[in-house]
Length: 399
Image (cartoon, rainbow, N blue to C red):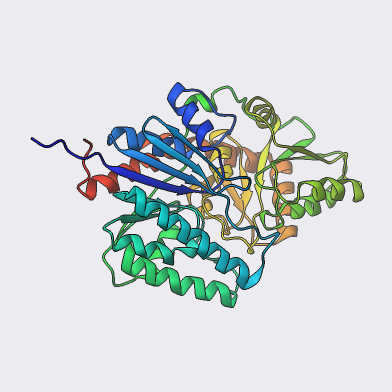
């Protein structure tokens, strides 16, 4: 009897270190990264299906490739906005994707899970001709939901519609709003969409203290990439228009605006009201959670926001959230949040004041966190569980 050929799965993702994540998965170690790690779950799915895995991550830096038991781990830097712009950037990204296609024609995966480069997926249609099942795994919104699309974005949306219609029937998405975008592109096609949520072990939040409303100053926490479109400068505007000494804003994360942010804090004379911590390890970040009263997520309409994991982490830490509908996560945490109109800096200021001054409102929102927590602990909602469901539906049973 001939031996059954092992399955082959490929994962194309964004930022990260595939080898570090692999080592942590193999040893059961906890990563310094605080949130959900989807690559870890991909490794586990490969193990469950006895599949050979190929991981490509699109992080800046130098090209690198590692071979570990059961996996090939490739670091393939994408084109850079800093060196290219406009049509040159778009063309370069298509060339980058085409090179991945050539590599996949040698590897011959049964399934190709695509997270990075969703906007430049047309070259992947070549893989469809060779019987590769392509599963878009969409973490961000496909396009900006609250602002007019540029010509380039409209062209990309048309190409995505063609690709989804001709080359994909199964999708992993991070929010209902993204699922709606996918369906709007291919309304007449019978497709399967699985919606996953950030998933966490309970022990990750078990040591975080409950908030103390009476403790002052009232502390507001911002976590995430330090970028203009993440609303980090809106946080400074809010901080600068509140009564001195009664509020304090903690900002943590890194990004292209890291250096500019600290200069802006100093230039505006906000050093007493705003502390920029940069990147924090798990231990130091938990200290900020202990001190925080609320979390602010002011993503602007200039970003295709997905399910911002900070929203789910705030709920698990028992902290109310101030955000807008730019964040699809709002639909899942609304009872514990105050919704602000997109880009409304004054609205964010008023929401912070309301939570700091109205004890009943604060306790209402804080108490609403508890019943919302289960959805982020349930394994059946995780990325890995939803991917497994799709793979089993493709008759790729665990071998």
